[in-house]
Amino acid sequence: MTGSTTRYIGVDVGTSVVKAAAFDPGGRALAVESRPVGLAIHGGSVEQDMDEVYGAVREVLAALGSDGVGFVGLTGQGDGVWLVDAAGRPVRKAISWMDGRAHELVGSWLASGVFEAVYRRTGSAMFPGCPGPLLAWLDRHEPASLDAAATALYCKDMVFQRLTGVRATDVSDASMPFLDPVTRAYAPDVVAALGLTHRAPLLAPVSDPVATAALPSGSRISNGPYDLPACALGAGVTRPGDGLLIVGTCLASLVATERLDLDGEPAGLHISTDRPGHWLRAMPAMVGTAALDWVLTTTGVRHTEVDALLATTAPGANGVRVLPYFAPSGERAPFVEPRLRAEFTGVSLETTPADLIRAVCEGIGFAARHCLEAAGLTGTLALCGGGTRSPAWMRLFADVLGRPVRIVEGEVGARGAVLAAAERFGVQLDTAAWTAPTAVVEPDPAHAAYYAKAYEDHLNRLAEARTHARA
Image 1 (cartoon, helix red, strand yellow):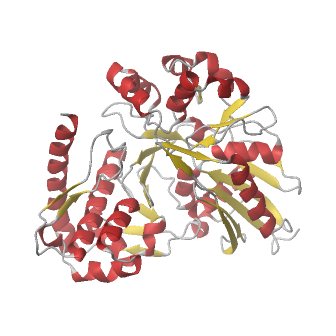
Image 2: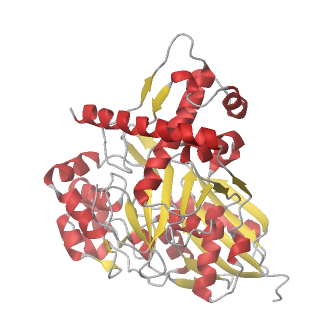
Image 3: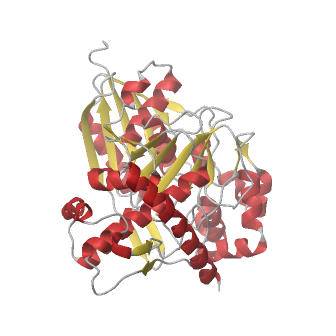
């Protein structure tokens, strides 16, 4: 195998799409294959067919071929519960991170102090779709499924076991909510606090560094990290203080840090990375492009019209203000407020669809600024995700955040999976070339000054709304 023919493949097992991307040694994308996967949503539960997800992974890998593959890096969606037997086969459908069936259990832990105690111990603020609440719910309502299972895995770990036979997870996935962030091992007292000591054997062994194995084709494969830290690697966010904002259905704000801070309001999580003593302070908010999708549907405006409409309205949206907390489950970062809902103010008969759209985009920008500040952003900021396809919105983000933003496009999670695998296999890649931005957007100084004041108003209105939500 020569350097000119070597390809590196990153597999990203997303919630709705499974992708595999092949890159040359310099980081240039050679080919991308994708397959959609379904979500079964009913009565607050969200589940996935493991065989369908695994089949999609097999298909995208087969489509790219195995000739000249140096190695494969694997990443995928985090949280949820993927119950498998000793052979790695599903014992029931996977429960997605989007699932809401455990919300009452999380509410009881909020009231009793268990929620805060777990956060102070691990740096992870639980939400209904994370493994702790879901396993506790299953133990109460569906114990037979747990009895039949050998392991409660995460998505990428299920794929890894099916591909290789190796049962393992990594420190990034295990960070929510059972991992001691200092020892990088499961915390038995946290497992006990959630009433799950008798289910502890279901937790997959934590491989530190990440597990590796061989595919049937003979190619080497590395398992991990999951999609949020993989995107941070793919965007070049590793230096303390630097941050990443993933503008997708939900916003995810990540800041690299060497400081484990378990004080302050319990929210978000500390994701352990492949380097001991280094974490990603994560604020995965519920607000995101779904809020923009809602207002576009409501106003009858197409996505292709957004940039032009943003260009026709001035900062401030002619007095319209939006608290963009549209999720039925409220908000989880940088605070936990299950009953918080969206609010529009300043709307009149003169308000136009463009005003509403700009106001929602500005509100999402303010929510992102709140998350990034809470996560400790002090350095550079990269943006990736579907929202980066709108240049006008990216300019608005730079203005609202008051800082330059590095736009990173092109299968960022898959890139991160390859870079993580390269580190694990001792392969030298030019990280700067692999993570180079496609553009850097500078803020308009006048707009940034306006938004700095508007952001303070946003925080004041949010404080009032949170008070009302608790009444």
